[in-house]
Image (cartoon, rainbow, N blue to C red; front, side, top):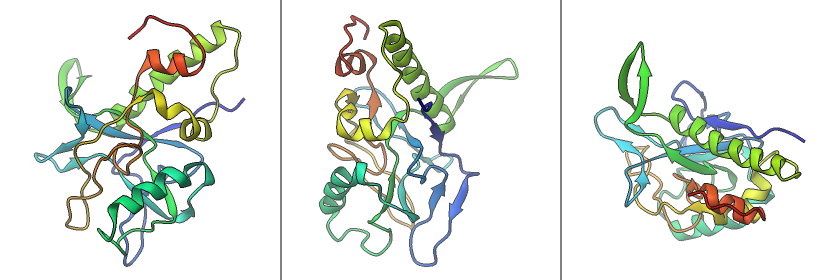
Length: 209
């Protein structure tokens, strides 16, 4: 069983350069990884955006990888909801990301012995990965196989266990960027993982929150 790969969307990632469309980030744009965006705040939890340093959640559509069949239904619904907004500025038939999200702004971090607050999907990605690791631990303890590659399951069933983030947006091309929306969107994906709901969707009982 393949292990899940959750990729952090770092500014240093390779950009898919295209003359007349927004640039996606590789390898987050690869259809064989689970890309993780970033959120901030609670009640409401919204897409991450820090005006002090320009950080926003990674978002976009690949100019090179075709849209995989596992995500086409949800992504096409989102593209339809955009209407003509940003038409021509992105490849609506490309692999869309992120798939999910987690907290990634003003993230409490220990750096050189000091507590600092940092922004980045380099925080949200391992946070999401740790939740999936706990889910896999529970599956193995119950005598079941771990999840493996998440995306086909995520887009068919697993999305039900994520908190849907519907406020905020990314930024780029001198625009407000892709907006968060009900269901999958191109800034927070399906939203943030909820451990107890993940166990429930997988047929495991838990009182964890």
